[in-house]
Amino acid sequence: MSEKINLSFKPKQATKHLLSVLNKRGRDVVESRYGLGPKSIRMTLDAIGKKYGITRERVRQIENHSLIAIRKSKEYKDTQNIFSELKALVLELGGIVEEKDLLKHLSKDPTTQHHLNFLLVVGEEFKREKEDEEFKHRWHVDSELAKKIQNAIRKLYSKLSDDELIVEGDLINNFLEEIKDVNEKYKNEEVIKRWLAISHKIGKNPLGEWGKSSSANVNAKGMRDYAFLVIRKHGSPIHFKEVAKAISQYFDKKAHVATTHNELIKDPRFVLVGRGLYALAEWGYMSGVVKDVIKKIIEKEGPLSKDKIIDKVLKERYVKENTIMVNLQNSKYFKKDKDNKYHIV
Image (cartoon, rainbow, N blue to C red; front, side, top):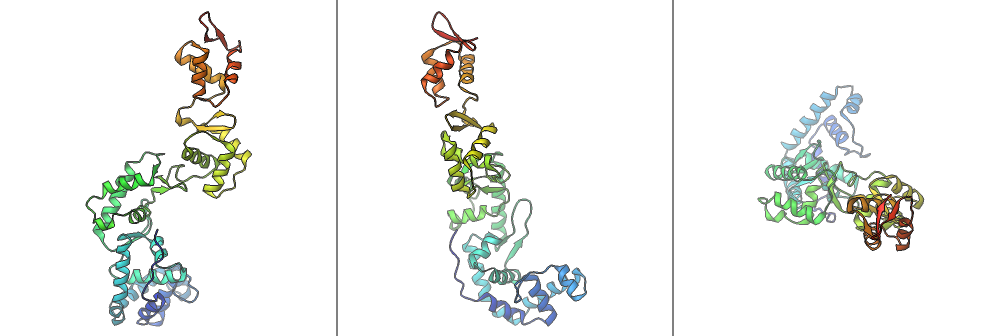
C-alpha cells in the first residue's frame, strides 16, 4: 500500500467551519456521533439520548437535520475545494476503498481520522456502503465502478475451491480477466490489492498467498495450520526444528520445537519421511513407517527385487539403504522367492 497522503487542508479546521452553522445541541450531537469533540470519543444514539433525555430516534433526526443544514449552508459551498480534493484522492486510490484503509491513507492520527470521516459523510459525492457478509465498510465516488468491482470480486471468489491458495501475481491476473472493461488507469497492482481488501470472503495469509478467508490456509488459527503453510511454502520435506523456526519468523508466534513436533505427529496432513523430516500428505507420500511403505509398494507393484524396492522406498522416505534392507530381512513380514523377489508374508 502507498504512503500517507499529504492534504492541502487541515481536517479539524474544516469540520469546525462546517459545524459553526449549527445550534448548540445540533453541534453537540454531531460532535458526539462522529468523535469530533475534545475527547475524540464516538457515542451511540442511545448514549446521546440518555444525555438529553430523548429517544435514540430523536437523536437520529437531529443528526440528519444537522447534516442537511450543513449541506445547504454557505460554509459548505466555501468548502467545495476540500471535497474536490478528497474526491480526487479516492479516485487515485481506486474509486472504491475499504473505510479503514482510506482513512489510514489520509492520516495516521485516529483523532484526525474522525474528522476526515465526517467530511466524507457530509460530502454529497461520497457514498458509504455498510459492511455485510461479502464486503467490509467501503467508500466510493463512482457507483458504476463500485458495482463492477464488487461483481468481479464475487466471480473471483466463486472460482476458488475451498482450500485453494494462489500466489498474489496469479490472483491479480485472474482479477484483471474479470475487469476488462474498467478504465486502464486503475489496472495497477496497488489499486487491485486495495480492491481485493474490501472483500470479507477473499483474504491473504502472512505468507502472501490468497484464498477463501474461511480456509485454514488463509485464516490459520493454530500450530498445525501454521506448520502446514510453512511446509507448503518450503515445497519439499523439512525438519521439524526448521518448521518451528519458520513459524516464529512468518507468524510472529512462539513455536517450541517439541510442541511443533507433537502437532506434526498428530495431524494426517503431514507424513514423516525421514529422521525428523516431514512432508505434506497431499504431495503423494505414503503414510507409515518404512515397513508399511514396503508393504504398500509390493501390494501395488507385486513381487519386486531388492534394488527396485530400495529405489521406490527412497522416493518415499529419506532413509539409508541399510534401513530398508533391515526391514526387508524381517521374516515376519517379507519373504524372498527363488527369483530373488520379495513378497508379503
